[in-house]
Length: 447
Image 1 (cartoon, helix red, strand yellow):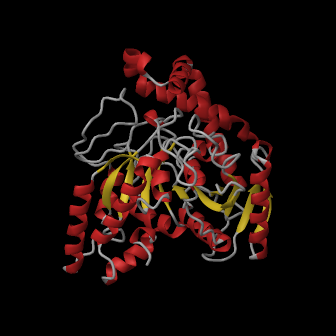
Image 2: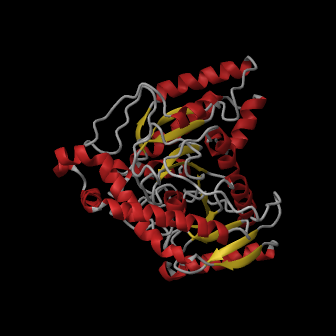
Image 3: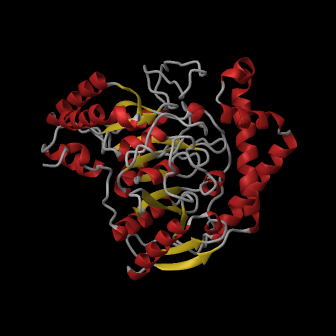
């Protein structure tokens, strides 16, 4: 008999609605998995077991009374521990941070609760959501990294500890853990999901996103997370009026970006992606070559200079007071941020706008762009969480992007593919990803 924790959000929601499943049974199943595996995986900072069970029982009483709050009613979710949850500590993965108990939920938490979701606990993050690793391990093989900085969220969802979890991305901190853990990662256009109540890394680049086990679940969460009146820190361009219109469910027209990515990618990943493209072609997709515009040369410098300057601006006082307590890799970033001059920062803001505009134009003729998500599958050891260079174009530009699993390597670790679309084209991106997911039919899971 299938354990409730194995169900997708959509499947669990249907069973909850029909009375075949209770929210309490679903929560108990998730907690059972956490009890069995947490000593190995270390995905959680804290699990609020009794509170979560009490909330599940309340959800059941509401369902019995005919009161279903929304599409996530009774669904447990984890929260990366840089996102505020009312009445629970935000620790940010480090004792350096002055741990606080927020008086209010972050807006994204409030929106998910309004849709009926149940907060299960805080998931592990790397210190201050940067590149010094944390204790979380990869469920597919605990000797390998789960990626970061949304390490615990990716591992918890992959290991069936919860059906969904929130993460964040400034470089590749959401999509890379999704790739390494063999699950779906989704981030919307910059600013469409509120960053209020979330520890800043870079105000003009930070994204809040979600880990799930299916594209359909990400599509279910997306309208629940989206702000009705977004207030982004930085501007976003609109797609050109002549951009291609997507016919839902149809074979997509995909732009394959070969340059830069293939030069940095391992033969095994390239072989997998070549096989994936063949599958798409046989299923009716059209695949065309897509190149980056000339302004792509600024993407790496933009990411480094904008992120590090804004990172230092946030940390300056605490870093000056407690520099010796900061982890080593973050210390290097902050020292670089302190040396960036104002004119450099402003110039690279302008370069980013140029890349956004030119990339919008380049993508006008395709439904989405596809490319590798990481140079390899999850690296051995916990000393690194992987590189964000493959994800930076979509973080710097703020374009919506996804990760979907595409197979397993010779060691049984997941391959993944990155999919991106023009800004504000989330529905088209999710529809393309759903088509790709159906063709690939990836069903493997950690033991």
